[in-house]
Length: 156
Image (cartoon, rainbow, N blue to C red; front, side, top):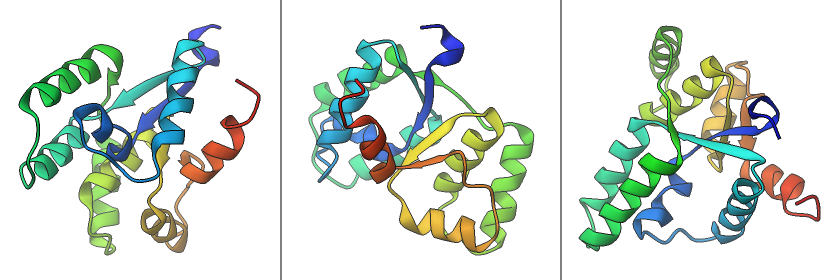
């Protein structure tokens, strides 16, 4: 499958945390599908340094296995592609923050996907509702339940 036909997904931090040893309730099925898509070369995955910053913030508030985190960080850097917002993406995130959404990192992830023409895999209902309320383009967001419906069947 050519690179242009692959599913290009920017993963929310929720899907990166388990790689670093943090269990997230209800995410196992998605992780299995992501692994299968990758093995079949049907998808490529992206992350932003903002996600790593968010993850480090969470890890700093809990006990963690240093070696597991180190292996996980190396795995993310080697297996996923790093991506940043465009200048327009940064500015759009600031505009949306000014409209009242509290989580700047989620906005940066959304605007990165939007401006880099990636799909953003997320389970954040509040973000989606906020964007819809403000008439923003949500076509780049793949809500977790939709992802499971589409890729959780026998298509793999």
